Length: 312
Image (cartoon, rainbow, N blue to C red; front, top):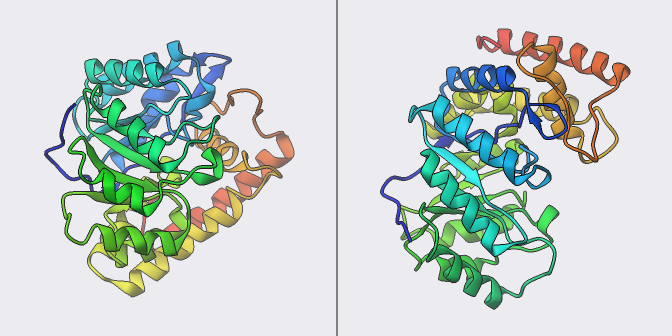
C-alpha cells in the first residue's frame, strides 16, 4: 500500500489511445499527441481511461502504452494509469507495471460485470489497496459500470490512506455536492469532475479540476478555463465554457452512437495531423461524410478560440 504526498489539481486530460491497426499503437502519433497535450500547460495525464478505450485494449498493448507514455512524459507532469478490470489480479498486475514504468498513480472504476454491493465494494478496495504500489483515484462512472461509489462508501474510503481522490463522471450535481460535504474536512483528498460541460461550474464551486476529454484537442482552452474558474473570474469562465459547449454540441455529437465522443476526438486529431483515428473494435472511425462535418466544426471552433484570444 502506498500513500500519496501531493494533491492533484487542474486539468488532467484522459488521453485517447492512438491506434493504427488492431492491437497496434500509432507510435509517431502517440509522441505528437503527448507533446501537443503537454504543450497546452496541463497539470497531469490520465491514460487507459474511458476516452483511452482502456477496457478494449489487450494487456500487452496497455503495458506498451504505459511504458511509452511514462518514458516520454519523463516526470514533467504526473501520469495516472487506469487499472479498471473485471479481474482483481489483472488490476494489480497493471498497477505493478505502471509503478515500474514510472507512473504516479492509478485510477479504478468498480468492476463492471457482476454488480457488487457497497459493502462488497469496500472490502474489494481494502484488499486491492493493500497490494497497490501507487496511490489510487476512485473513478465514479455509473453510465458504464452500472455501479456508483455511494457517498457513504466514499466516506468510509476516506479512512484508507492509499486512496487519494475521486474522479466523478456521473454528471449528477446532487452527488457532486454530497461529495463536497464529505470532503470539507479533508483538503488533501481531491475531487475531479469528468464531464467538461460542468468544468467551469464545478471549479467555481470548489472542485479541484477536470479530467476533460477535449483537452486532447485544445488543451490550452481547458487550462485557461480552469485557471479563470479557480480565480473566480465568472465572465471569463462563461465565455470559455461556451466554447466547451460548442465542442460538446459538434465534435461529440456528430455520430449516432455513444461512441461518437471518442470517434469525434480521434477524427479531429487526425484532421489536425496529430495521430491516426483508428478505433478499437467493435467501433470504427468516422466515414467521409462525418469526417467532413468534423472538419467544418473545427473551423468554427478555431474562430471561437481566436475571438477569445486563445491559440487553437
